[in-house]
Amino acid sequence: MNDRAQKIKEKDLKYVAQISKTPKDIIADFGKGCTLHTIDGIEYLDFMSGVAVASTGHSHPKVVEAIYKQAQKVIHANCFGNYIYEIQTELAELLAERAPGNLQSTFFSNSGAEAMEGAIKLAVKATGRKKLIYFQRAFHGRTYMTLSISSKRLYKDPFEPLYPWAIEVPFNDIHTVRGVINDDVAAIIVEPIQGEGGIRPADPNFLPALKATAQEHGALLIVDEVQTGIARTGRWFACEHYNVVPDIMTMAKGIASGMPLGGFIASKELMSVFMEPTLIHCSTFGGNPVCCAAGVATIKVIEEEKLLDNARERGAELIAGMRSLMGKYPSMIKDVRGRGLLTAMELATSEDAADFVGKAKELGLSLSWTMNAGVNVRISPPLVITKEQVTKGLGIFETIFKKSRK
Image (cartoon, rainbow, N blue to C red; front, side):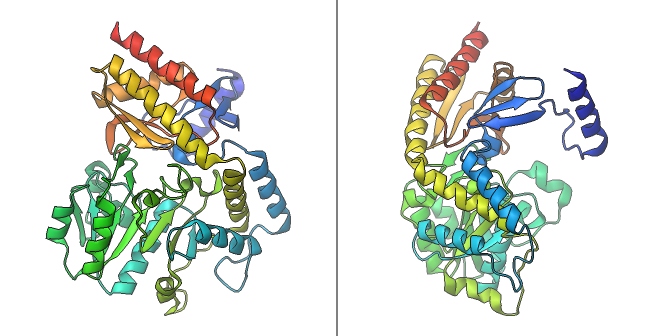
């Protein structure tokens, strides 16, 4: 480690809040496409993309240009006051045109957790009810409300009591949902593919059954597309794979290629319940014009570079390659799951997953495991990943398994 890197690490430890007992050791300098470079001159092939955030790759020139141009005009005035930003309306229109069904009206936030908070407030106000149904292994954020509808006790227990009207049921179990739902339930909240829960897709009939069950009881269906949305699975939103139109849909992560932006979208009629009383829901920075400019550029790049197709094709190659490895190393790889460029390998133990991620880093490949299911290694590269980079990553996978078997 050079002197500059050492000084940066010392300042980080001294001044930046630490959230892990293991010190951070990668000091990012710059990125391009699917690669990240450290100030030590190390290059990493990025199979994580900031947890499905860097959708158009690192510092895509068209996204950078859009940020620069908007920053020269106005950075912030008042996102939900008297000011209208043309770039915000453009992004909202682009999202409405790509969202399923009658989802038309977007409230912009800064993050996925904020988006889910807003979605829940909308459901509670619209229905006049308080109960929420969520699922085992779910993850929706780390604010008080989103912790209440997330599953992992390790993160919840220190902050109890949480929201008292949240009901946890097994994922992909419609019978249990039907057994607990009643006319006091405001919303069912579900990820079409559980992200931190281990990249677990909903069964083909599960989301349609949830929608029908919610409608039967006058509840709303909130679909969390924070990790799965914005072309990650090869469709603009993963619920499209199930032909389901949610009542409310959240998004964030890949929406602006790394700029802090999220939101939730609903029908114009449903969103109108936030008009009374005035400003019952609001955000100082939500819909920031610079972030919205990055969002508009992100959508345009995805379409211009045919990244929906790329997500499907490269994702299929990744899954086929990992399944081939599972055939060679069945004692090490227990399952391969995913859709598009949101995939995972399930290993035997959480220790195996952590060891695999560490060895991959030594070989120049950036990976992570899923928080609510630590046996799973998540593979979520930028949507611009090439066939050659997929092959390179799979080769590193095999190198690790070969060495581990000896």
